[in-house]
Amino acid sequence: MNFVKAFFLSIYLAFKEIIRNRGRFLLVALVIALITLLVLFISALGEGLANSNREYLANLDADALVFAKRSDFIIPSSRLDRSLAKVIARVPGVIDAGPIATSNTAILLGGDEVLKVSLLSAEVGKPGFPRLLAGEAPVSQQAREVVIDQNVVLRSGIALGDRITLRSTQGTEDKFYDLKVVGIAEGSLYTFQPSIFVSYSVWDTVRTKSDAEVGRESTTINVIAVKFEPGAEFDMVKANILTRIENVEVADIPTAIANVPGYSAQQNTVQTQAVFTLLIGILVIGGFFQIQVLQKVPQIGVMKAIGASNAVVGLAAVIQIMVITVLGVAIGGGLTYVFSLNFPPTVPIVFNGTASAIALAALLLIGPLGGLVSVIYAVRIEPLKALRLS
Image (cartoon, rainbow, N blue to C red; front, side, top):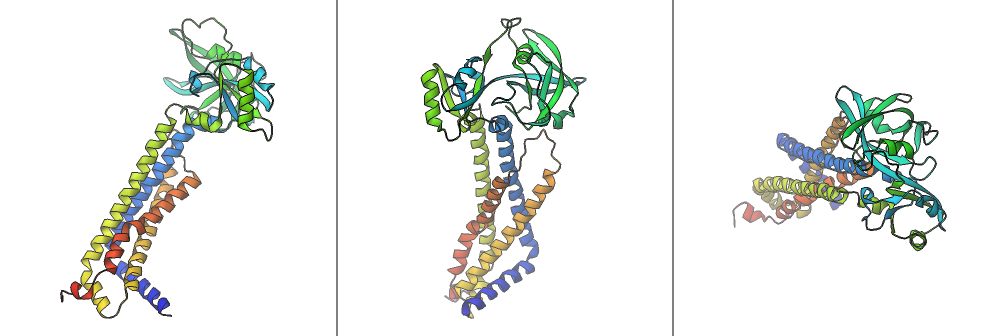
C-alpha cells in the first residue's frame, strides 16, 4: 500500500513540476526531438547508401558468386570467360549458373540532361536476371531491347514501350544506341546507379570500350551467379567448384556485398555518426536534469524533512525524464515522417522499419541514462545540508 502511495505521489510531483515549468521542459523536449530527427535520418541515410550499393546483389536469385582468382571479391576487378557458366552449372550441388557482365552508360533524357545507369548483362531465366514487374524479357541475343529497373522509371519517367537512346564512349568517341524498353524489373540499384539489363550481344556492343577493344567481340564477363540445390551447404558446393575449375574464387552473397568498393567503410562511418549523436543526446539530457536538480536542492531538502522518502524523490525524477524523453522522441518521429514525404527519389534515404525501431529504442534509453546522475544526486541530498542547517 505504501508503495502505491509513493508511486502516485511521485507521478503527482513529476507532472506538477513539468506543468509549472512547461516552457523549460518543452525546450528540452524539442532538443530531444532534433536529436531524434538527426538519429533517424542518419539511420535512414545509412540504409539508403547501403541499398544503393547492394540492391541488385541482395535481390539476386542466387546463393553464391564465382569470381576470378585474386580479384578480392570485387566485381569490376573480376574477369571470367562466359563459357564457365555452363561448366559450373554441371557441378554437383548446383542447380543453375548465370553469367553477369557489368559496365556503365547514360540514357539521354533530352537536351543536355542524362541519367547515368549501370549497364548489366544477364541471361534470361538464369540466376542474375532480375524479377520482372511488368513487360517481358528480351526475345533474343540480337534484339535491341532493354529491361529497366523501377528506379529508372522513378527518375526519368520512361515507360514500357518507349525507345531510349544510350550514350557510350567507344575509344575516344561517343556512340549512340537506340533500344526499346520491353520490361520493367524490381529495384536493382548497383554502385549508386539504377540498372538496365540487355542481352550479352547488345551489352558487348554498347559497353564502354578502350581503343584496343573497339571492333572486337568479347567473351568476357565479370562474375557468375550460382544457385544451389535445396539443402546443399555452401562449403560443400564451394569445394566442388574449386576442385573442378581453376583460378576462381567463390563467395556467398553477404561477402560479395561487403566487398563492394567503399561499402564497409561507408557503413562504419554512418554508424559512428549515429553513435556520437546518441552520446551527445545523453550529455544534453544529463546536463539539463543535473541543472534542474541543483536548482531545487532546497525544495528537495524540505520534502525530505517533512517525510518524503528517497524512493519518492528518485521516482519523481525518473518519471520526469521518461515523460520528456518520450515527448521529444514522439515529436522528432513525427517531424521525420513529415519530412520523409518530400524527398526526391535521387536522395538515398530509406526508412527501414527494423533500423528505425532500433534507433527509437536507443533514443528512449538515452533519457534515463542521461538523467541517471541527477537521480542519484537527488536521492543523496541530505535535508539538513540542503537547508543549510548543518
